[in-house]
Image (cartoon, rainbow, N blue to C red; front, top):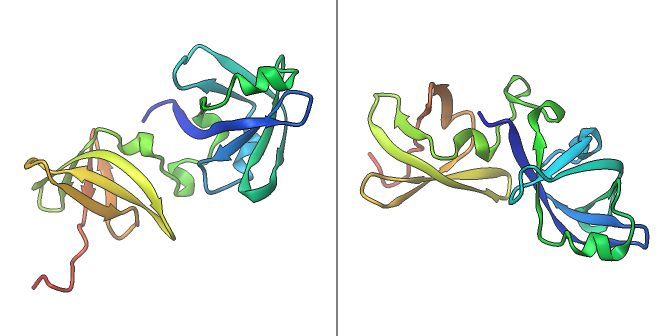
Length: 168
């Protein structure tokens, strides 16, 4: 499991003091209030220390960073994907996994048969969907539920693929 998780993207400046409106990528908005610092995905050494956090309208989060003090400074962050250290976030002990936990991992079924590798994950209503590229190059979509995602075994995941109505 990687040490950092993508938590959102900078949308635009908020107000006149350099705050940044962020599109949250975590379901738990309260988690954003626990995060003390974030890093740029494209420039991992670039650190942003959070001075204040509050919820904005339409589900956004507003972060005020130290040393980002003008709307122009905030505008320069537009499109930056922010990564947070896992120490600020819930984890497997709380039943929370992130795309970074699955990315690139091999997936097998309960019988040890290869299903493919995880290439993407996206939200779909009530739960996330994991995209697996099969050895034949097709995409298999699997809901990220406890009934499907059974456990991690080293660098691979064991899944119980869902049965569909047309299967016997």
